[in-house]
Length: 145
Image 1 (cartoon, rainbow, N blue to C red):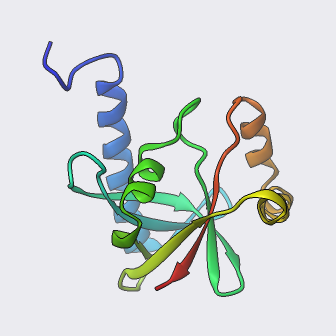
Image 2 (image 1 turned 30 degrees about the vertical axis):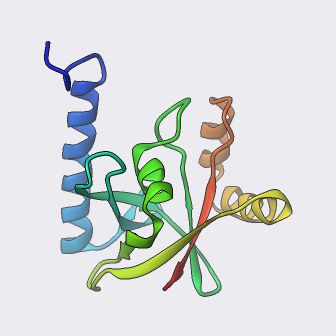
């Protein structure tokens, strides 16, 4: 077994393929799935330094976009780890637009609670998904840089 192989290797490969396919669809047809708006978050790998693209659900708030680090089960998803490691390299892309540089801000306390209530009002399935995991999903506000 190689260093990259293991129980999660196939799962990661499938996730990368699914992300690439969804990003392609967003660029070609628009960014909506299951009643939710999608963007493509561009990050740089924490360890690899390689560019990454992750389709994510987003919720508009004033001049910013809220995203939720829900994937990954009991650990934070890779895109979130990459975003926190290299925030200055993050960009976001929407259908028909060039990527824009964004600054991430992880919400905490009352600010997070207000945003969370709004998100789960709009998409109750997210609260249901959160109840299945012990870690609290980070809510990240992206603002244009």
